Length: 553
Image 1 (spheres, rainbow, N blue to C red):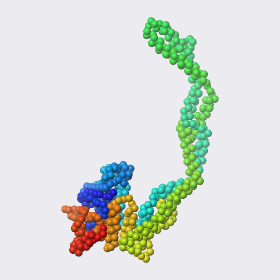
Image 2 (image 1 turned 135 degrees about the vertical axis):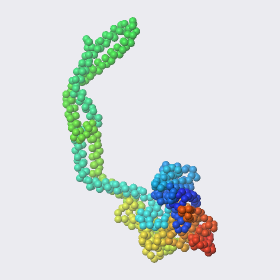
Image 3 (image 1 turned 60 degrees about the horizontal axis):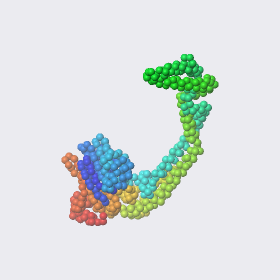
Image 4 (image 1 turned 90 degrees about the horizontal axis):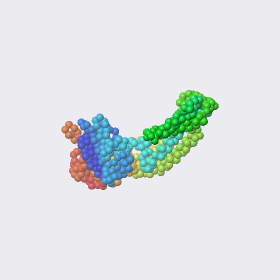
């Protein structure tokens, strides 16, 4: 997968650009100030860099950047998980687009679907690596140095980070419990006393409603019995009860229904009513048999309701909520018991620490195994970059205390020439040496990542002559397996490229604009000649340029 096309509209000093790119090693050259790094700025914007209105060409309303990558099969999983069209067609391309208007509003798309700047950044890390002219500065940052070594050793530190976080949580819980022992004990005693008070009552869920119903029934038992007995007398009295009257009426109509058909329907109604009265009589008699005044049960209910209401008032709870309150207090006490159980917390902290130490020691061993190999590879690369006899070392020093990143600090040391003592990279005096060391590291580690496009932005500054030619050959070699783009001012590097783009700046009316165009044949000879000897091209300069282009690469 490689960068196939860049389309710019009103970007910095480029009015309009539609550039096709090829695989292999491509250089971008041009006069100072022509804007050789504009394409890199555009690539950074379209892969999530901060939206800056300064990138909009003067007088335009917005800038628009689109890039296309060929064959995105390796990214289908990421695209699908992120909700974008994965393009299962083997020939499908990946299209990224971003716009920024003069109000600073930014919009982005991945394969035509709206995207966030964070998604662009995540995707950009998978698409290409950019090595800038100040790449050496990152070599002074402990996290960057450690990251380079871990990448070289192919160490996955995610499990280490997770075990570190688990250990920190366990340690924090233990320390908080130790500090809060007195407070926890007082709170546990308070809850324990409250629970003991309410447990004496032992309230059950739903019991309150049943208690109030039973109490109300017993409190009015005599009234209920009188009502039942009176109703029964009205229904089943031998002299004037409703049952006797209904029966007599029904019999009278039944005796004459053969003469009057309408009586038959009335007989049905009265018969049904009589049956319902019989049911009611039966129910009332049963109620009177099982119901009595039971003053002892009423006293028990009085006592329980009084105790229940007293506890509810004391703890400012609704009476019906008392069982749930008791359950909540028990849960809270269990949590406090766990928090106060120092032995359990100490055991958990020790186990978490042991897990972290196992992970950290495994990472330490992998770093120790990889360090001399990385040092040897970078030392070898330095020999061809004008630092013969120079030496690169990876130093692992035990940290004062365990860290999220492991048990050691990682330092890069370098000796620029034979006989010198390796010193920290940041203390190397020569800017040229720093650039060459950064280039050696970039060349050594660039093959580690998954990104298929490598971009070098004037990382060859401070070198020249045979060293510059070596740099060009190294980049050409990288270009055999990956797409390599380099912004350079060195003709030796440009001559080694498979493809050559020239960035030119010109006046267009009142504005200054840049253009990017491929050069071949005599046009490329002329550009190499300009890089060799300036604007005036002599026959000797052109002959030298042709000789360089006929050379290796």
